[in-house]
Image (cartoon, rainbow, N blue to C red):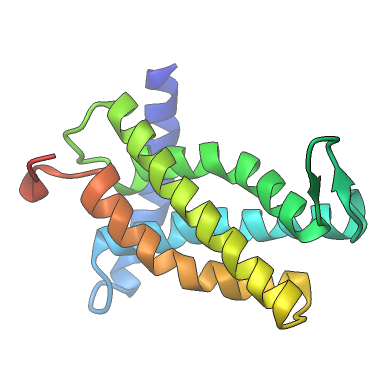
Length: 169
């Protein structure tokens, strides 16, 4: 399975790297890869969020019996379930392919950062939607913009450390 993923990642890296010369003066290769791969995954997440919010949960409360989620919260968790594995694939095999850490360590660290991001996203959504009365899709878009920069720095320096950036963890 890993060989297959490596081949897919090699193709994606090749496609992304093909366009990097247009932006080379402004953006380093790894940052460009992150913007393209992470941006694609972010757009997918926003699309899943929108579809779940508008059509699956129909802007109502989703009751699990032990906890009731408002539509914006339930949509956020559905989006997370879709984008987490795709984001890890992009981060592990496309963006941070020079990391020295074992895959299971990367996955655990990536998961920890994503959980923090999910909590931050959830908190900001509650503030924007429930306190400030913003439309949920607009609030989610603004929240995603706020979380992306932190995520890149955390993933680069913690989840997918490269040989030049070792720390004593």
